[in-house]
Amino acid sequence: MFNLSLEILRNLHEEHATMLALLERLEKLLAAHGPEDPPDTGDADTAALLEELATTLGEDVTYHYAFEETHLFPRFGQAFDPGIPEMLCQEHELIRPLAERLVAAAAAKESGFDTPGWSQFHAAGRELVEREVFHIQKEEMGLLPGLDRILEPSDDAPLLTAYGEIKSA
Amino acid sequence: MNFPGSILMGAQSQLLDPTIPYRYFAAALFFHILLWALIAAFPNHVAFFTGGPGPALAALHSLTLGVLTMTAMGVSFQMLPVATGMPLCGATATRGASWFFIPGVAILVWGMAASDPSAMAVGGFGVALGLAIYMVLVAELMWRILQRALIFEPLSGFGLPALVALAAATALGLVLITDGDHGFLHDRAGITALHIITAGFGFMGMLVLGFSHILLPLFTLSQGVPVGESRTVFALAVFGLMAALAGIFLGTPLLMVAGALLGLFSVSLHLRSMRRCLATAMRRKLGVSILLMRAGWFFLVASLALGCATALGLSGSQGFAMFVFAVLFGWLLTFLLGVLQRILPFLGAMNATSAGATPPLMSELAPEGPRRAHALCHGLALILVAAGMALEAPLPVRLGGLAGLLGALIYTAFALRVLWLIRRCLHTAGKTGKISETTEITDKEKS
Image (tube, rainbow over all chains, first blue to last red; front, side):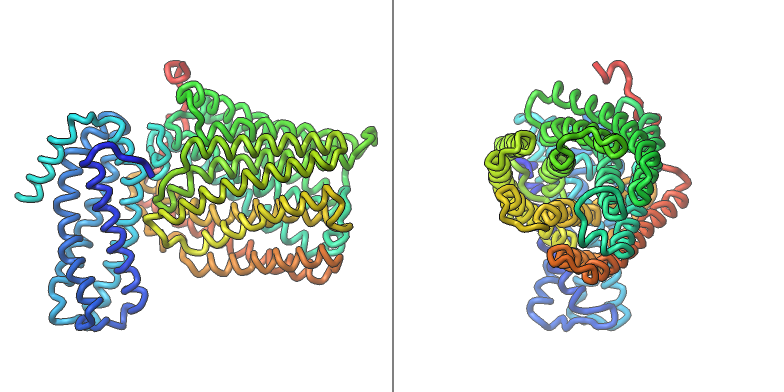
């Protein structure tokens, strides 16, 4: 990958890495339990994964996406191909409802999964993993290196502040 | 935009009309089936192959021209403009190259199988014409990359020597076809060896090294190969290639061995880079395609070792044939199939996205089951055909050919499914993707 010079881009990269690790764990859970085989949510690992999913995924599609859409995509579109941020926004729109369903189901983990509920979670989870991984691949290899070229060191502090404000809003 | 990740971003303005790359891929699928069918149908010719026209030579060229070069052309036309952010200088010419090249390969392969010199001459001429258009288009683009970047770029750095090697291999191929009719060459075996090395290591080998430095970090989301390392791999590979060619031309085994050793140094450095890519990957689940790529790397090392042994006369009567098999089938075909397993769905998703359609899921486009079944058949085919050639036994060759044929059919079904799903996706979106005419170069871009 590329050595990113701005802290804001390195932070986004870290968030991508965290999300990929989480998605890999989710993928393993989905592989271990088919659509008709709900996992035991009392199991410590499963419970931890669902809890992390509820918080990290929720934050990702809320703050991370909003920051990119407001502060980064317009700059990238101006400097390069405007169709690319448009495509990434479309992907956000595809991923958001999937993530919301998963977050809601994961947040209600105390009640456990019945078979129909797990089946829906399983389908949404598989789709989310695939779409989010492909999306992160594009951002890691295209968006972040591209932004690293066009952003100035003086942009770093205002962008960090803006991201902080979005997160604390 | 000219950073490697722009491939994944689907840089819309640079995407060609999908019919251009896919016509090459479709033809490659056909020749992939044909080559294994020829091996299965004529195992005697393969087990005892010592050169000259016949089904074995036809199978060999189904692979080299029909599969490897055909795919390289499709991938180059599709991915170079996207990866570099620079359009090709003539989209119509990319179609023109296919009009000459695809039927040219078919006629040449038929001529070789039937030992028909006229068909070989006509086919060879068509192939040369198609390749000439390809070389001009790609060389012109790479020249612009070099001028603009002013630094070593893996694509242009490895690509330009690859094109020089392709030109040399094509010329040597035409000489060999002409000689078949007239018998004017004093050292036909030497010219044949030069033809094989320039085509296998010079053209395809250089392209594979260059594209690997771009594609593997993309697939795995890992650290890219540092420019200095890429340069060293390149320099060692070029010196190795030149030494080997000089050794063959002068009939000096030590120079050939020196070439193979330099090649081994280059490959060991290259594999170290690739291993680091895999070790630092953010995305580790690469499926069966990485197994095929790893198998390809194993055969690359094995082929260079076999090349050394052959140059020193230590590999027995079948040494040279085994060397050629290891290079073309073991390394290049296996590696290419592994890469294509990942590229085809990527390209499909890119085309769907560019047309404004909801991109299909990767698991829909490329389910793991058929890919595993193909890899298994391919591996079995390699082992059986290699054993049959080493032992000069037709039965294992036939069984290997059948396993390869089954694998090729599975692979074709997999690839056609990808194409069908993308077509359906584009149809649903009511569009046909970005059309090549938009990529015609303007005078401004040229300057």
